[in-house]
Image 1 (cartoon, rainbow, N blue to C red):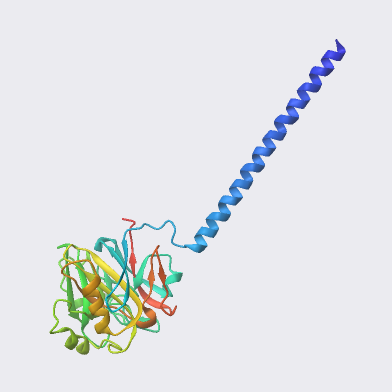
Image 2 (image 1 turned 90 degrees about the vertical axis):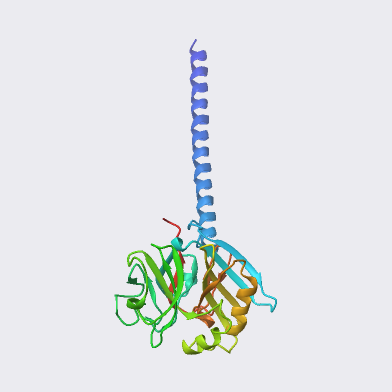
Length: 276
């Protein structure tokens, strides 16, 4: 009887040890799996820092007959957010492209949302309330009337909108895509920098279907070549829009591609905001 009891006791101890070993093994397995998962997540984030952002745009690449490569993001105007940057765009965790002209940390193009300038306070120099020095083409989304326009203005006060609490205005240089007889005189009057030099370019367009197009080319091109490429390759009707800042400021953050320009810091960004 004593021998039998001892045997049962020994067996119970063995089962307990096996159970403890199994629990420890499962815990080690879970810890290892968790560590691998965190490593992969960290690696993925480093490779694509935009993981997890709302993807509120459609991406497209085209090449014009003159071999100008265009990278495009089309989206609803309700998903646009004009915001300050202050760094190269690839360091900003947001989709979008560069905005208007700047000098140092002063924004020299209008960039206003709901009557609030992007880079400071209303009517302050460099805030985005003014198109500095010249009246320039400014793409306006009137949210109340749900309509687009390009208005040649010098300041936010001059903007013609239905509701001052429901619009945005992005300054640049008029493209006059519907007016072949006007556009060259307009870019001269609005002082588009380096129009006849081959530079990287960027632009913001709208179409008859109520879509916005954010477009960057790293191909060195003149203003005329860039404008012609847009007319030939953007798959939309009734296009109109503006030239944005160019050369090394021509930058894009997309899930599909990052175009860094020359990696210079830009003051303002036209961002995709799909969080509404």
